[in-house]
Image (cartoon, rainbow, N blue to C red; front, side):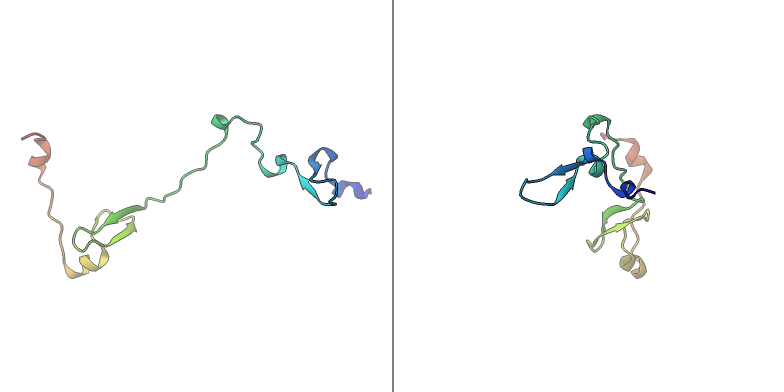
Length: 95
């Protein structure tokens, strides 16, 4: 077996400066999509897991939650209730 299998191909090694002995890998090892136009590159997937930033309407506490209500846990434990939306007001947008 040859020990040459552990070495990088010569085309991927680039000398940084002639006075230094260190070598830098080419961009093909760092970013596999350098040759692809920006509009065709894969996009990062945004993962919010259903979290939304809300402000408690009673105390003003700002927090992230997955719950359907905007009340914070402290206000909910104290027994604060949000008024139910009136379906008749939603049907008449102008008057």
